[in-house]
Image (cartoon, rainbow, N blue to C red; front, side, top):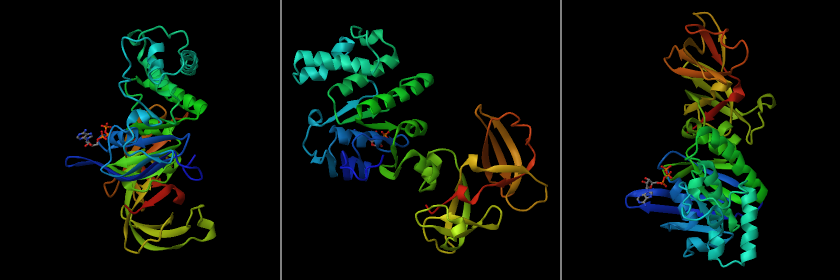
Length: 376
Ligand code: ATP
């Protein structure tokens, strides 16, 4: 789902937030559609939490506007926003039962008793904690505490739930189950979720759209597949997944002939000279590039093929320096003549591992459509 076509639920327009000399959020514009599962992804300190806190109303922007449901949130305190935040620590009340924790916001809002009772039951069912309503948080597992916090965040039926690294406290196995659990709940309710994470796998698994942040700015916004298959910069290509970067120079650039048209918005073809093998190749590219321009050719390791070849062959050839068994996949590291290391991964299928051995001389190849030409 994209934010196009529907009224955005959240609109962030040119928002900046400074803490002393640090610009935590730097002129960010972004919109989130109703019902979207949206992820803010980036390394530690890039400003994800600050941006989320600006939406929640715990911080005020130094510049720009935050609109929720078309309404400017300037001066609107957190508890008056149609938003609820699930904190990393869960922040459950230790002396209250599960039921009382979930009911807390509803009691504060003075909802009629029977309505509170119904809503709590509905939430308990939703997060599959029926029968545990009388327990206190210290009588629950980490995963169950997380679900109570989620139920509490959802009880007031907000239009948007903010989740700050919601799975950080869970172990790996439980994290996966909880990811699917959060997705199920989100689908069932149709509430928009905004999740903050530094874990690219987590963002890719759960979100409809991801905003990749770096140093207070948004580097790219798109569906997980778009970000992975068509990263806009070297930095994004390396942050989301593994990547091989080949330095290259543009020789020429022009309209693509039909045959090579890969369904790109602006089908163009550029001839680039790969520094590593000193050979030219034709690749699809999305913008007009200037001869002589220095670019990068980015290729994912799973798109690289290795075939045995003779010692003296020309082109993109090298020696297998390492082979690492990783369970699902096998990683091959190939040292090219230029010294550059190329990473290639193969699915661990029967027979894998017998074909290529350490020290073998191999040709490194990939299809034209597998390489992405990056200008920055
Ligand atoms: P993490 O994943 O580590 O939580 P983050 O991407 O969420 O990081 P923020 O917490 O938003 O990043 O912080 C962005 C920058 O702003 C950091 O340099 C941080 O030190 C700074 N910062 C955040 N909050 C404050 C504050 N209240 N006072 C001073 N500096 C702050």
